[in-house]
Image (tube, rainbow, N blue to C red; front, side, top):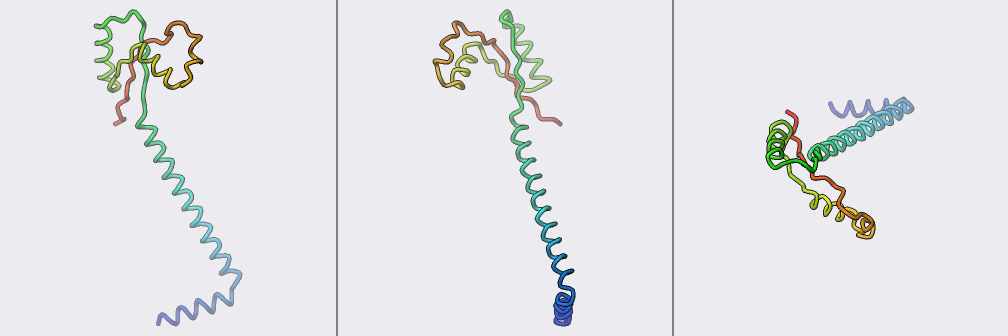
Length: 126
């Protein structure tokens, strides 16, 4: 029984060669484009997930902030946005120096212009 269908398909393929080749190329192109779009979608989702995990907010602080004000601010930030990390002026300067890499670039800066800050790792969206 299956032999009959294969024979008929082969006979039709030879009789309508142009139509068969066009169908084969159309299906191959459709499958290729579908695969490309699925691959792009997957890669875009992976990239967004990687970026989403690094969401961070930086809150710069005035120099006059007291310890009590800082503690209160950290509690409010923790409650609404996420876990804060305090970065003092010296830590910020050390990180900038490490990121730049060349100490000669920062030799013209006489005193540390960077403020203290809170780095807040944002909570994931519900």
